[in-house]
Amino acid sequence: MNILVVNCGSSSLKYQLINMDDESVIAKGLCERIGIDGSKLTHQPAGKDKYVVEHEMPDHTVAIKLVMDALVDPEHGVIKSTDEIAAVGHRVLHAGTVYSDSIIVNEDVKRVIRECFDLGPLHNPANLMGIEACEKAMPGKPNVAVWDTGFGMKMPEKAYLYAIPHEYYEKYSIRRYGFHGTSHMFVSGEAIKFGNLDPENAKVIVCHLGNGASVSASIGGKCVDTSMGLTPLEGLIMGTRSGDIDPAVVQFICNKEGKDVNEVLNILNKKSGVYGMSGGVSSDFRDIEAAAKSGNHLAEVALDAFRYRVAKYIGAYTAAMNGVDAIAFTAGVGENDKATRKAICEYLGFLGVKIDDQANDVRGKNAVISAADSKVKVMLIPTNEELAIARDTLALVK
Ligand code: AMP
Image (cartoon, rainbow, N blue to C red; front, side, top):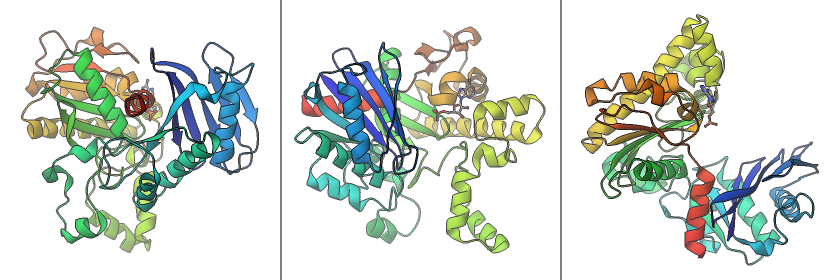
C-alpha cells in the first residue's frame, strides 16, 4: 500500500511516495517557486535518474497535477496510475486547540485549518491549498491532516498556559503549542524502541537541533513539555530566531529605533539566533563553527550560547519529569555535529551522563553514543517526519 506524503509551503511543495509494506521511499521530490516565475519540479524516483520539469506553476493545484504526472510517467514514474496511491498524508501546522490527533480531512477539518490562519499565517493557508489541490487531482482519495502541533497538545495545563490574564487564552487560544511535533513523536518513539526502554514509562528528552530547534520531554511517548510556544520563536537559540527573551526587549528596541512591534518580531524571527549573535556571520551552523574555529569571538559565543541553552532545557526537563532515561539528538546539527552533542552532554555530568567518544563519532544513523556506564542513554536518532506522517495516515485509512 502506497501513501503519498505532502508538505506544502507558501511557494513550495515537497512530497514522498512511501511503500508502507516495507516503509521504503519509492519517489520523492520538490516543486519550487509556485506562483513565481521560473517554477520547477525536481522528481527523484528510487533507483532512477533525477527528472526535472520546468513548467509554469501558478498555484498548488497545477503543482500537484505535475507531481501526479511525474509519478505515473512511463519513463520517470514509479506507479502505473494514481489508483496505486491509497491516501495522502499532509503536514498541517496548526489546528489551534481543536485537534491534536491526526484526522481524515472533511469540511469541518478544512474549516478549522482556515480558522487557524492567524495562528499559522505562513503555513496554514499553504497546507489548505495542498489539501484542496489533492482533492481536485484525486477526487474521493482520503486526505489525512497530521498536525505539527499535535504532540505538544498533550502537555498538561501547567506547561502550556502562559502566566498572562486567563481571558487571552479563553478569547484567542493563546497558549504554548510546540512545533516539530511529528519529529518529536517519531524520535521519542524510535528512541524507546532502539534503546529498549519501557514503552509505557520511559522518560525521554528529544533535542531537535536544526535551523529551527526545539527540545521536548515525554513520558511513554506523551509530551510533558516542549520548548516552542504560541509560535516557533520561543525556546532554544536557532539559526535566525532568538528563542527565549524578555518581552521588554521588544518595547525597548521599538522605542530606541522607532520601529513597530511587527518589525521587531521580524528581527527576532529572521535576523537573530546565531546569525544575529555572531554579528551576521551566517545562520548555518557549519559556517558558525568554522568562524569560531578561526578565532571569531562572536561566532564562538553564539555557538557556546546555543549549546548552553540546550543543556539548560535538558536540566529543566529532567526536573519536570523527575528523571530522564534517554536523551536523543536529531535534525541537521543533532545528527551530524558530534562536537555539539559532546559539548551539550558535558554540562550533564551531574546526571551521570557520559559520552563515548568513539560511539559519538557517527552521523545520520540510529546509534547509542553514551558510554556503557552512563546513567542516561544518549542516542542519535535521525528524524523522519514523512514516515511519521505516512504511518499516521495508514493507521487511519487501513
Ligand atoms: P535542518 O534544519 O534539520 O535541515 O538542519 C540544518 C542545519 O544543520 C544547518 O544549520 C546546518 O549547518 C546544520 N548542519 C548540517 N551538517 C552539519 C555538521 N556536520 N556540523 C554542524 N552543523 C551541521
